[in-house]
Length: 358
Image 1 (cartoon, rainbow, N blue to C red):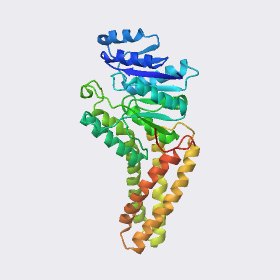
Image 2 (cartoon, rainbow, N blue to C red):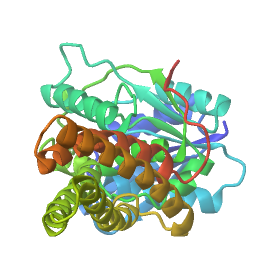
Image 3 (spheres, rainbow, N blue to C red):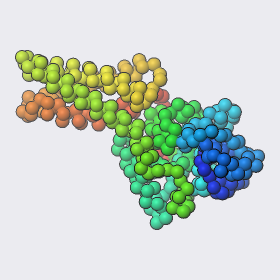
């Protein structure tokens, strides 16, 4: 088996031993268990885990969240293994079967450049309401806002190749939002997603899960809304500058006034938008030159489209110029969102494939 199993664990119960036993029996030769600051009351469960020769136990002194636990395991894996193809992450509460983990690992062996998701069915009567609603909401959000099509955004059963692991170590988020940011990273880096159907297991209505649907939903959507907030903020700045310049240039002809106001407003707002997206949203640490070139090529096209739309709506159809600006740039906003995500801030030119259902 060229894939290592990773089991993050926080305040486990007796089900952790069963998970490790089944993974070992399934053929996983290395199992990394992360004690995410569970405390002395749970020491017996981790001592039991150390009894398995396949297990490597890593510890956090304080709770750092599931994302922090996964990153610790990823870093250990990258430092101490050489020939393994990647890892498969498995929850320690018994929701994932060893057979399904093995199927995801085999799929990764066949497609090492992909992210393999073990996806559940959410139409069963035993599925908790918070899981059904939370997953459907994030599916919609990813599909509409990010163009990422997945069937199960909250699954913890994921097989990840070594190359993608290196990138994930720098992806922001230490709690449940990290798994959402991982999906966003697949789109930005062009990592194909493959889906493997798995059993849907909820024990005691998911009572042992530490996922809080209210607290962690806000964290999950934070990066998505950060992008939208930056874009909307830049749009507001653009409209405000346009209105100011439209007033200052009122002595010129309609064509020159609209052109000057559009260009000046777009130049200022686009620079702010580029800097905020690069540093706050995508946390792109590469040299800004190539991304800036792509960004301003997009801005040239957007400026021309903005001017053409505003001129059409105001000079031809008779709408007030500011109202015409708002309508035009609202439409351009959605187009710009997708282009920036797929092209401007894409780190690697690897082709993004459609999600494959196995």
